Length: 192
Image (cartoon, rainbow, N blue to C red; front, side, top):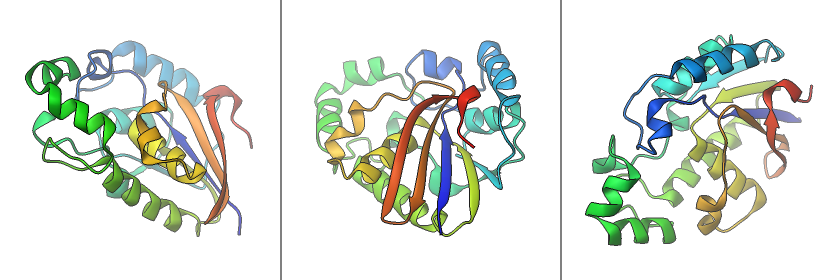
């Protein structure tokens, strides 16, 4: 059975603009307006999901999706860094940031490593492979990165080299173990 999973990155929030590890900040008005506008271009999926964060839930709603939260699609858990900016953490813990950005197995913040995130997302993707039809999930950028790394068989060190702009779609299609990847689609140009 062939499956299609489209991952949509959330709209802009103040936290994203500040490079802040998610602090539960809602979408800003510009981000919400862009998501509402993009929602008019989406075909209704067979199922709609979202990462259990405020900005993903609000983006899904603004897109007009009747979506459900999925714990396996939660963003990277960053422990004590939660709510802080990358600049603040870099100033206070430069060695920890350097290790975190270069060693996928490390979690100096006391949260989850990139490797653990990739494993979690891979397990979810294997489950999604058994769902017929189209799945649309509004997810944090790190979920898109993890899917990209695993679908392409890239080393986990490539995780931080994948940019995921707001309100873009990444689609994986095929079946478990044999996925094709389409990245960076503007929402108005999604394939059927």
